[in-house]
Length: 347
Image (cartoon, rainbow, N blue to C red; front, top):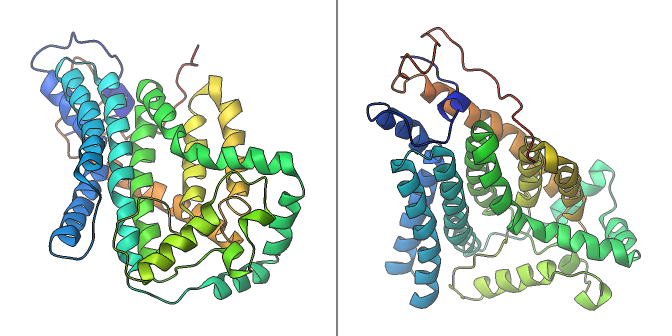
């Protein structure tokens, strides 16, 4: 058995590997998103149980089938491309399938968590901000007094919805090693944020301090008041699963901003645009995402803990994977797994 550099497995994206080599290649391809699929599968079981033997509702059949169709199309494309030997393209398709599947399943757990009616923790989170030396009210009002900044940050905040659909396919082509780590980390971190949210729910600072949306006319999202409306409805007995973000602490937007910025660093032609965008996303979490400052620090810390853990998982399990055909790789059983390295610039 040998420790195999993932980027060497994906050295080429051509269907001309010998028939005896292709099964080994597909083993590596299949493992790239395996942690995410495991967690999606576990979440699906919980959601199905909650909707069949529990009081929860996922949505009407038309909506459900449409969501499933999107995932099946991209996953089917990934399988087809893999069987033909186009592994980078297959991974690009699969990364989109995983992104959609995560979005259609895991956030639903937050409704189940909110139904436990744990006490709101806004006072404690606001106190934590003050302990850290931040004045939450001053931050949001400073942003409000700069209309152009408020509008810009609103669009930056919402970019978490579409950035992965561009970045992940690019990473599949230029740095699949980084992709599998970012993809796995994002899924693990999302589940952890929901687990923590169970015990630290919050209405958001805007609602807690009595602001209305009319007080912030240039904000292009209704995140603050929308979250509080959904949470209060759940506490009143609503059991429709919401796929909207309900988590305050720790901020998943902060997790996403960290991972996306790191991912874009591997794409030289675009990193000068998107790394600053994701730095701005971190700042937007407070005035636009209605997070407390401590939420953002919590999300950043979670990303910094989960990424090495997921990387260690892959490094450990790589060591037990079927060895690469010797004529394609000169590494021996003692060859260590190399660090990620820079890949060609996108042109």
